[in-house]
Length: 506
Image (cartoon, rainbow, N blue to C red; front, side, top):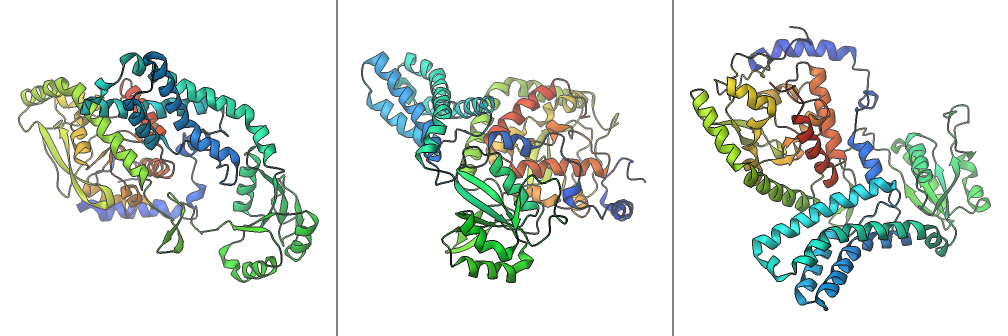
């Protein structure tokens, strides 16, 4: 069996499979994770457009960014209520409090391109308005509001925010001038992370930072010749440079192995008034949701964490519940038709239950419409392949259109799955691939999904080779690093479009 032949994923054949794979991997072991081919369309690329560099807490624009969204939604509601009813009644005040709670803090994406910001506003408002409508209908309180006000608010609110963002963009240069001249910054260490920081500062026109240059003990001949940034001197000249160039901020971008040198620099900088920041080199090339935190007052840095912590976890779960309920209500007649077709088409149960690896690696049971004449769920599971004799005639259509996955919306309501996330694999497949693909189990830090970032980027259906499975895992991890509600909505839209023309599932 060659690596490019179809992987059957039988546990009994795991030894021979591993031997072949390890021979293949041995030839490429010298490559690091960072040298892999880039993803065709990465969530990081989308994230760069939708989540640009933070303006910083000391920037006045950050204050306006935080309040401009909630204020636009609330003021537009009050204006419409006063226009149609002549007064702002108590139901509108209560709704305003709910809107503020769901939309604060706001993010206007001031440093992204305007059309990206408009898309972000529309997507966020669609989610928020959908949540409010569901709550209103479920509680019956929607009848306390004027229909003309609500209908008008659905389109006036996002337009108000878009207009407010245009005003903020126009006023941004003046607001920056009110805060005085930019703070002059110096980076110690002209290495990879230092250059990356310099690039981000240069790409952030509203950051209030002016990068003066670099300090490094290496000569210019040993540094990257293509760097556009100026090397001002070495570490021995640092104190003099701070005084001469009126430096206010120092970014230490030195490897953690240089601890004695870092401590020496910190001791010298105690004789200055500069602000000091450390740009850590974590020796980790594949950080997942890295951010600073504290445990009982002790500062820590996360290296690998689920993106669904705190309010993001609440948003993810609420969106799953709302969307899955709406979808199940809409497709209920279709579910009945498919159930009858499966029952008539071949002998066996309508719903096929299979064990999968869920969140935190725990075993879960997921539902599918049965599409095969067999119901395999043991230690030996063969992936479906083209012209597979086990697939029934009805099952072939269901698998090609992914209609066999529809019962998994019930799994979403149960809390076992999410609408968007890494696709779950059989237990037997997990045990094989976790030993062959680095970082494979990291995808199980979140709930598995009905659709995922990998599936809408060409990795739907059978994974015939290890390279294809590696590509699927790369996209899964890319999703975890760069999750946002907008990315989930984009994946859902791309999934719908994909199902209309894709033929990779069989």
